[in-house]
Image (tube, rainbow, N blue to C red; front, side, top):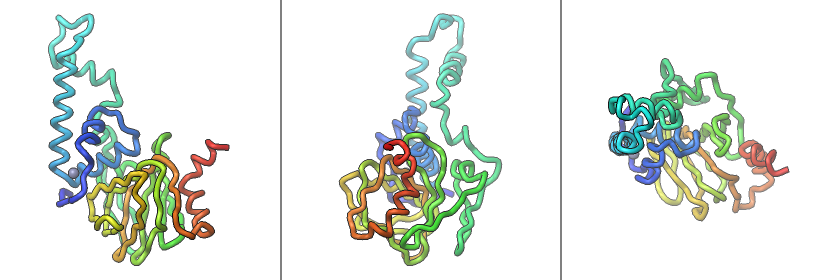
Length: 235
Ligand SMILES: [Zn+2]
């Protein structure tokens, strides 16, 4: 499902992904982006082959002289399971479709695996539905579906928010986003996502949103649903 996408992970993020250093939730966002984006796929291939060369070049281990280079490499890979690319480790047998009221969306490979056992949608304020995914101790991961004409509350974050568009489009103060776009918002960026045609996204948050508009009464349930993990840990 390669398409033209305009918003990509940074090279630093792709390199960190290749090294297996990202949270599961973030790795899945990047892995799914790679399904749409050949230029980022090429970058990851380069970083992965550089890493493979480094493994071969350093510390062959006690049995080093007897081992071929490929054996050493395999040994390194199998001794570091987190480095096995999640794209291959978690491929589902067949694509999974998510069904919302207005549309059905076929998910990219790694997200099909995530959704294989089914997802449970919850309605939030503003025409937004989320399906919480239990993937990661360090990040909050959800499918987020914005109904046509919906608008999320204006908000900022304490940490990073990554949104990968899967179907439809949404826009905020900084741009318009299409399927495959990888949108990263930092803690200083206040934004108000909205969608005229409806939009399905996969989103990763690494800390609670901080709402800045006067919707707090409506949004308390929103925050509770999204961030019950953080609430549990802080009390
Ligand atoms: Zn890309």
